[in-house]
Length: 249
Image 1 (cartoon, rainbow, N blue to C red):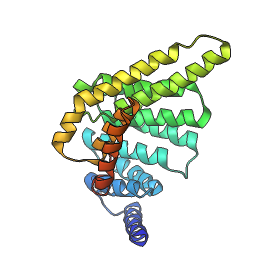
Image 2: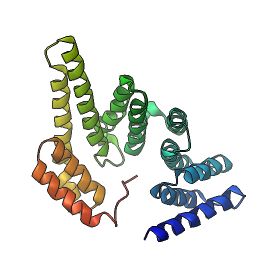
Image 3: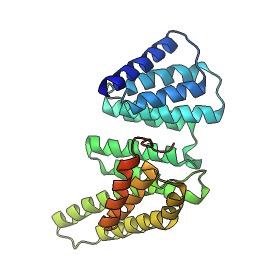
């Protein structure tokens, strides 16, 4: 199995080399190839492919935006780049393809939130967590206006609220201030998780087993303390992982 995966990756890399050397490729083909490379942690090659294709073609806005999402993902996950530069470049890719003030796309909100969360992991600056929360929560708050809403932005918003609550508890404790700010953030996180269950659980069940749907509901239940239900969902997810392990785009 490992050999087959390596062989497939080498095949896809060869296709990228051909494109870099001038072979024509359509936007749909480039997106499909980049997706396969990202799935195999070959972000270096996905990034080079997309960086070559995007400027070289007259693309309709939807095609450009889909490729920009994939380029941003490949860029911030590309371990050959300096982390700070990669995160800034990924943000710039999205900012150049989308009007961030009028954004109505959960995938892009999720990418922006992930970028800022990784910036926080890099230097510990709280403002990155707050910006990450801004993007994730925007997707949740605008969920009725989105073309597609899968709930993972809401799960991430709740997780960031929990992180901020822990930071506030620690700061209050160090200053000798009675705890309070963190509790408010945890209540907000609980409300968001409950909304995921109320609005999406039945819808996901009706659509049939999907790995990311199951994991999203499991994470909502786990965050609310419904551990038995979360375990049941995760057990189901392990049985469908091979067929549906990619998060919806």
